[in-house]
Amino acid sequence: MTQRVSGATRVAGILGDPVAHSRSPAIWNAAFAATGVDWIFVAFPVPAGGAAAALEAARALGVAAVTVTMP
Image (cartoon, rainbow, N blue to C red; front, side):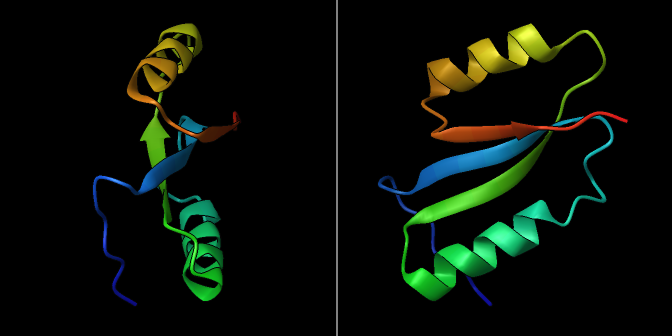
């Protein structure tokens, strides 16, 4: 499945460490593609202690939604 990303594409993601193994991007991107929603879901690695800065950055960048995970 190829996803096209444009300037109008909304970004959502998962914050945490580790997140490389997360299945969330595959699940959400399949749902977005199946429903024609112009969003993309990505994993954002955020080390312990970095949650506040990551959330501030997400707001500043206009990230539409985030989920948070921790071990």
